[in-house]
Image (cartoon, rainbow over all chains, first blue to last red; front, side, top):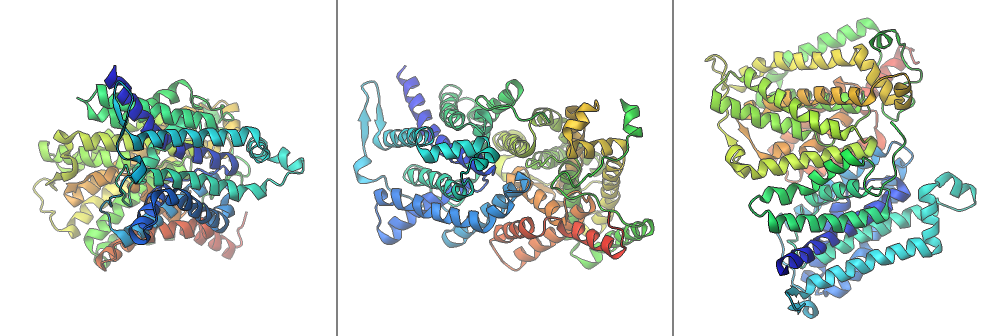
Amino acid sequence: MTAFLQSTFNGLVSGAFYALLALGLAVIFGMLRVVNFAHGAFYMLGAFGAYVLLAEAGVPFWVALAVVPLALALLGMALERAFIHRLTRLDPLYNFLLTFGLTLILQDLVKLRYGVQSSPYEVPAGLRGSVDFGLFDFPTYRVFILGFAVAVCVGVWWALARTRVGMVVRAATERPELTRALGINVGRWITPVFGFGIALAGLAGVLAAPMRAVNPLMGADLIIVVFAVVVIGGLGSIFGSVAAGFGIGMVQAWAEAYLSAFPIVAQTIVFIVMAAVLLWRPAGLFGRAEAPA
Amino acid sequence: MTSTVKSRSEPAGRGAASGLAAAARAPGWARYALLVAGLAVALWLPNGLYPAVAVDILCWALFAVAVDLLLGFTGLLSFGHAAFWGVSAYVTGLVAIHLGLPFPAAVLAGALAAAVLAAPIGYLAVRRTGIYFAMVTLAFAQLVYYVANEWRSVTQGENGLQGVPRELFGLDLTDDYYFYYAILPIVLLGLAGAWRIVHSPFGRVLVGIRDNPARARALGYPVHRYKLTVFVLSGFLAGLGGGLFAVSHRFVSLEVLHWTTSGKAVIVVVLGGIGTLWGGVLGAGIVVRLEDWLSFSGFEAIGLVTGGIFVVVVLLFRRGIWGTASTLARRWWGRRD
């Protein structure tokens, strides 16, 4: 039982990263119909931002947690204005290809400057040690990540469901033409929403810095798992993306704990689940069916 | 149902309906001239380039044409074609090492393995379209990558499969120059096969599906089955390229299965021109030559260049080289339609 709880907890923590990344992808997709391949690269930039700020300017984790996502949001908005914006009227595949190209560029720029070896990042002072949950101890930092990620997801849900901006975004996501016809300037919100999605990726990156190896390729394989997560949850669904993120994190942790004789299962279970979902509910667990094709 | 395939005329407004470029049209004699010129270049290539680079170009040309068959003629962007290229490379390598078969037989075995793998992946992937199709194929290719990485007893994991022989009835093919001419017929056969698919009634239906899936379905075509068939054919062609690649390098590394390989194939197609078939061959020549030149001159960040090409082509040059050239040619002949 203790072992089960512990692996569940671990799963929720890695699920928190999937959820934050999937949430950003889903928000961007909803508003722009763009699947942002560069999301993993922005996650990597978030972790590198925290590392560079600490190593070269002595800026502590807490400041980085606020500054880095903000800076990345600005970078994202600039890229949206400069490039992505020009292709949103065309087939969404073009933007997928464009952001793939941007991913290669961002990765190699970081690689040129910092090499491919991993850089260490210390757990911030207040979050070292572990928390005693009675049955088992758990590293404080991981508890923090989980709490923080859940708070962010709830906050985003609240903002979408209860604020005026959220209402506009939801309306523009579901019926862009009609929303425009009702006199709402949809275009004004596109760039900020893109920046916000990028900020979420950057936030996940900063959170990952003390826990995972900081290197230029850290987002490369992760983004593909996140793609599988959003296919499972249904890319159009914000709730589905978050739920699938946490769910896949747990399933992976269980596979690691109970099928440790077959390490391949833990690595690939997300793709196996995706295959099953495609067979059973092609639109994703929480997605709506596409127009028949 | 098959009778309607033959009697159906070309769907109106094809190419205009989808955002992807339509196939090129040129006067008959010009097409023969191009064919002759293309064959001449293919025969001359290893005299003008390093033969090893010329061999790589042939392999990537097959790969690109396979991807274009889906992207340009069916409207499906596969971002996971490294799975077929790579699995064929491994199977070809294993067959050549352990059975000592002549390399064309090993490559055929590899390509068949790729086609067999393409069936279940295609079956699941054609349930989604557009951007989802790209994500799903990407994810399945990553699954294949992890399995190859973990199954070390067969694939040798990160060490790679070493010492793949270039066996052909005792002929000495160690020189890349002669090896180029040994694989050229196989590659031309593969390219001709792709051309045949595109210009068959089956290929016409694919274009119809690309441009108006709802109408194709309403006319009674089993859309999923058509997509699955072309997916398997495309997997076979990509496998043909991957198998030759394994034999030519005498070595198979995990990189053949990585998503960057899938991405590179898509870059090649987009640069050459989506939906032009031969544009992919041209794109393969440019990208392979460029990467060889960059790595030879000691430039480390190749991704910077390939990524840059991608961004520029997608933003400014979406018809690609072949598409742009054929548009200009059509304007020259005053045959714009």
